[in-house]
Length: 221
Image (cartoon, rainbow, N blue to C red):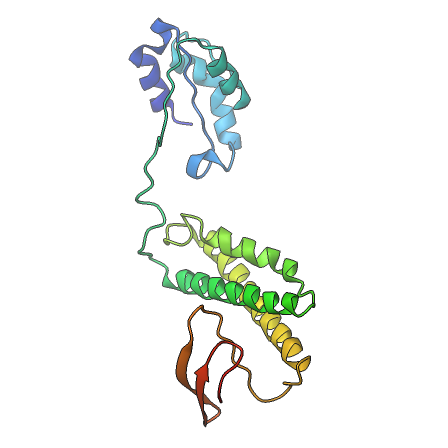
């Protein structure tokens, strides 16, 4: 609620031309946090700033009604706002970006393992990861991942991402254990390649070198 913005709109000829002017207000980016008590108190004096213009306090649905009933409203096609500065490559908070990257990788691995279980006729229960996908998507919001959110947002993000990392890691371990156990592979090591490419590599597992050559679920050890 900024009286200066309202005064500029009125001085720009809103009252003389009798055209509607919508002033949206509230806390946060885009006012999504809703109005505060102070903002609502300031509404009492808007008519003095508006200089005689007829003022109405209403919900946003009223704006849609005004636009639909106006025969002279312009139509704009295409983007109205360029978000090139939002959610870019750089960040002021490397920890959250690292956690987001790690959780994204684990969730993709969880989907891969779940698909193996499904092919084998087992229900992996991947729907239990819904909250973890939501935690990932929330952390990818344009104010969180670039480091422009506040302390409380990051406190919540770190807590949610940490819990999801633990849950998804356990989910993968449980599903792999069940998958290998049903095939008589319990104990030892099992290596899953979830990429579309064959890999030749040397794995160091507890000081035992394993030469691995072959496809995702087979080959020569």
